[in-house]
Length: 223
Image 1 (cartoon, rainbow, N blue to C red):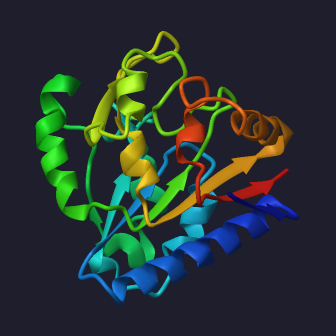
Image 2: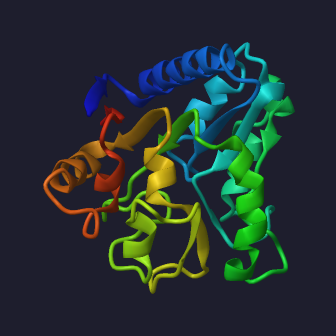
């Protein structure tokens, strides 16, 4: 694991966006299409604002969320909405979005259909993750039902996450899919997240799910 520290969050956003663009450009030299998996939330927004202007062959890039709340795409809580508004704009507007949520179906019933959309873009070329103070990543939460199965090396592509602290179920990429990305980046801000990451390094993934994907990870941190 490589930890890179930045003087401020603006510098982090610029440097991370440039790094992601370089990795995507390199991947496009070898593959007809490449996959970029990104988180929702507020943390990656500034990175998206820079990355969307990168001079890449975006029509050959498939963008998907690392996880998604089972809410309409126009909901304030939708990761798809954030990704479309902040990343799939400017030059990146021609990239193809691969959803993790199908409206009108129970999450468990929708998994086969969603997996069929994702299978052609695996393995992920470039992965961006965030991490909560509880050391969850994507929607792999400590203590959630089915966590052990989602962390297993033979886990299916997707899992449904249901927790007492979340108002709706979520659909998430599982640990082997995330960990199998050819390039992995984690973005965290503040002392609390830095302390949580250091704690996670000495805990099993069942207690700190982020630990399942830290091998070979580049961590980008700013106060």
